Length: 84
Image (cartoon, rainbow, N blue to C red; front, side, top):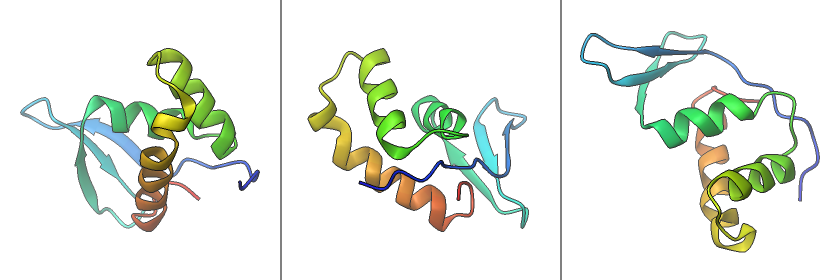
């Protein structure tokens, strides 16, 4: 698994309705839920393995159970230029 430290990009906001929105440096906005916002927030300075382990710990979930969904989420956050 990739051991490069992730770098968070963009910003997290709440819109006028209270919805969480991640905005990348190109000013593209993405509505997210609290889980996605949390994953994005812990990506800064951690490896993918560290992010998966931390989320498994706080969600009291088995690492193997969440590994593939989190890898997919990290891939989508990269595609949206919200982490590198």
